Each structure stands twice: as C-alpha cells, then as structure tokens.
Image (cartoon, rainbow, N blue to C red; front, top):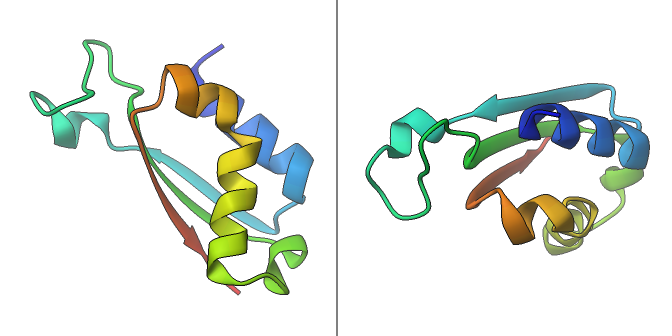
Length: 85
C-alpha cells in the first residue's frame, strides 16, 4: 500500500473528517535530509473534523501524530499538519 493511501485510510478511520487532503510534497525536498528515491517521505495534511474541533492545536497535532505513529517511525520523514475548523 502506498504511504499516502495508508495515511488517508488511518485519518478517515480515526477522525471521520468532512474534509481531508493528503499531499505528497516529497519532490519539493529532493536532495534534502530524509528524502528517498521514489518519494513518499514528506507530506502535508489538511483536515477538518468535528472530533478535532474541541482540542487545542497541540492536542490536534498529537492526535494526528499518534494516529500516524507507524508511518512517522519508518517511512515518513516530515509531516505538515493544518487543521481547519
């Protein structure tokens, strides 16, 4: 399974978002730390979910990082998170 697909699947299951974008920005980081041939190392997530609305920004980011812990520990070098209310 592609990393992007795993991220989408896990975020959908955990937060039931009404808006979700997962953007692979790996090519923007070619030659930088953490970049690997084939990409799928640097992602941007834009999410809007009722289950995140009542949390602080730190709590929102922790919840998303916890959800994606497996990917962040192995395949993903960088994750940018934008939570929209």
